Image (cartoon, rainbow, N blue to C red; front, side):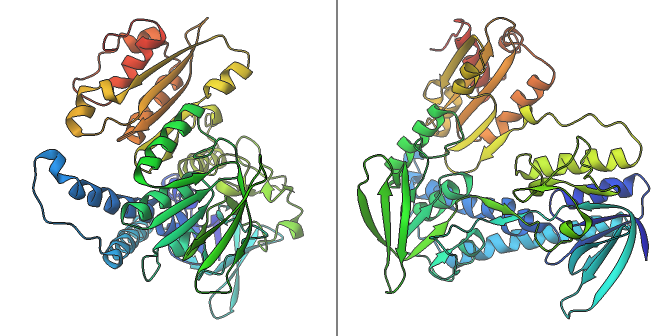
Amino acid sequence: MAYDLIVVGSGPGGYVAAIRAAQLGMKVAVVERESLGGICLNWGCIPTKALLKSAQVFEYISHAGDYGIEVEQPKADFEKMIGRSRGVADGMSKGINFLFRKNKIEVLAGNGKLVRGKKVEVTDENGKATTYDAEHIILAVGSRARQLPNLPIDDEKIIGYRKAMTLPTQPKRMVVVGAGAIGVEFAYFYSSIGTEVTIVEYMEQGLVPREDADISKELAKVYKKKGIKTLANTSVEKVDTSGDVLKVTTKNRKSGAKEIIECDVVLSAAGITPNTENIGLEELGIEVDRGLIHVDAEYRTNVPGIYAIGDITPGPALAHVASAEGIICVEAIAGMKPEPLDYGNIPGCTYCSPEVASVGYTEAAAREAGYDIKVGKFPFSASGKASAAGAKEGFVKVIFDAKYGEWLGAHMIGANVTEMIAEVVASRKLETTGHEIIKTVHPHPTMSEAVMEATAAAYDEVIHL
């Protein structure tokens, strides 16, 4: 059977590319070996946010007295929290199935592999292989948890993010290895419902090490109050899994001091690995560097008719990046002239509590790039809406080029900041200056006022500090 386009993978890159292609009149098929929606909808973005919401609601109820409400002592039902998360994921996957039927997209169930001559071989769960022809093929096979040599994931004692969402019982003690988005989100979830959590991070900055240093410090301060222990600039030397209690040996990279931490389970959250093995790249001579596929600005590989998007390419491994890449790729295939993706204006969001959101240069990166900068910061402790909501932790930090007023970056930590960052992304897209933000009237009282106030602080015009 022949198609105009076959997409291998139905995650946020693959399913979006498929739907856009169908909108443009192409005959489309999608190869998927598991559930529609890929890791994001089934094991990543969506179900983790459901767990985090459960944790947040539990925290609200636990602190109901702060809002003048008396309730009995709340109890977290771990099994029901996990069940709710899986239900949300299942609903989203069914939603993709509906969209595929609506757009007349065929699903080819099984593992997909490239074959010479613009073909995809799909092997189903029974081992039966069928070959399909396509004028164009997009690889969107995503990534998986990275395996560390001294931290082999067995999904019993040393687990990855998928198992962390389906544990049969709540562990009393957990060590989280890695303090990026996955690590700090799971640390918050488990800690909030009573698990004793220790985070071990290899990088010196500690929590969310890729964020602005001020964000990392603020999150570390909040997590310390929550009882979450963080070991920064620390490596995991080994994990003794021989007994019922795990013993994690850590080593401080600066002092050399070692510590043994006892726990019930270790969560490995030390990054991801692209799924580029066994999909036919070598047979077709597709150029790959350290597991990532070389592509141009419209996601063409070096082999005509073969494209790649998402986590298997060098860009940021984020769902919204994969979706944007998929649309650009398909529109280019259709003969349109899509605008290339601006990788310097990609928002990053971490959904722990408080939330973290950022875009553009950190302060250190802006200085290193040679900019003369203006920096403004506005704490939520000075926000009327934050005080009323009982969410005074965190701040908004903005960075502008002192010469031209270009908005170089923004970094936020606080309640709902993942919803606020889009203002900065849109403003940077429109080349908005600092003075234009100051003169843009923001509604009062809102958390978003902090963006205007932080900008005013950068230009020495702040009112409420």
